[in-house]
Image (tube, rainbow, N blue to C red; front, side):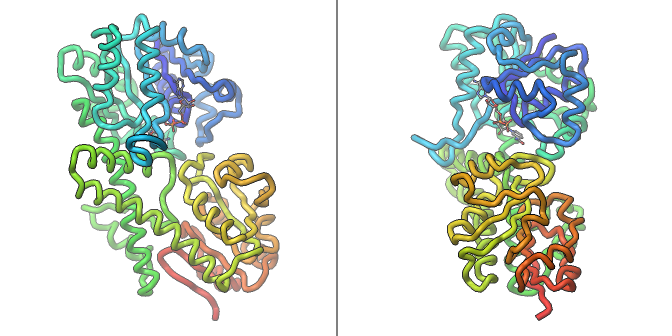
Length: 455
Ligand SMILES: NC(=O)c1ccc[n+]([C@@H]2O[C@H](COP(=O)([O-])OP(=O)(O)OC[C@H]3O[C@@H](n4cnc5c(N)ncnc54)[C@H](O)[C@@H]3O)[C@@H](O)[C@H]2O)c1
């Protein structure tokens, strides 16, 4: 059997690498329009950083895993085609700022219709609005490709930073298909592939619309938990409660559970915001306006948290940060990834730059080019540092924006000595030992805990 996956990004690359490791009898080729990305997948400098991913790629690459730009050839030969292209928020026209831009998915559907010869099953791996499968089918039908294809929805639930583990041991695999005999047959073929490493009980089979909506709903629920604990963190800071203690109490209720209750400077990533906006758009489209407003609030709370954090930095540093060096620890949207899409670091840094601060930024995995692109600034507007100590040297404040493990093990006495006094730390991820920092002499502000200092 031959599989072709269109899109060699954060989902297509890792997903197919794990599938190739688990199903050695299937030949898998990941294709992309981006030649540089494909070259990187064929090298040892992968375009995606994920723990253990390189070893997985190296094991399968050249055996039954291939990366190519020869899209038409692979589409022509494949038995199953996965569409794993980007579905960003639309920036223009109807639905701008909310709806998903389906241009890339539609382009794939048209190309598949034109060139695919063997393929019978088209799998939507990208996250898309409910009823997109219907649109794809319409394109096939209207162009005379007829009933040759079955469209399945198989949304991906991996989390960046833990993608390899999530793909090897998923909580569940979801496959939605048409409620017809051919539809059910196609679902079984795809389920048969996953069954090679996922227990049958974890493979959920639903109708197409449920599968498409479940992905949006799952991300909305995850983001909502973060916004809920962040909302409580704001209240903790003004009342003297500690959000860590509150979260522990809430999380021990087995009906609630302890995961995703870490208050922070806000969630980021390419998915939560985009998928909730998409959900809001769908609600408005179908006329359920109260539901739209409910979910929109999750995003407003996230923005509020970011603004609150940068506001706190400015007010603590005596209401001006003009010309002050501020060490920024972390730029990726979470630890163990080089992805900066939607990172809270982007909004916080932009705000601090507007206030004319001098930012000294250190992230273990994010490049200077990426930071400049995200902040929409010229070369040399920020100081790009090779390590955390260099960033803190001569700084008024250190701010933690990503929860990289290495920040927990830093020598904060050394950092304190190299900074201007009073030396401030703003812990946007609640990863440091605040009591110790206060003993060293720092003025510490932490999300959900407020200010701690000797004075
Ligand atoms: N990143 C995540 O953690 C995550 C998790 C679950 C689901 N998703 C969803 O998966 C989808 C892909 O996300 P991603 O993060 O991998 O995106 P990405 O931007 O990293 O990768 C998408 C790739 O598709 C390629 N592409 C676009 N149009 C193409 C075409 N016509 N032919 C060939 N290649 C084309 C692009 O060049 C790009 O390399 C999105 O819908 C996203 O919402 C992402």
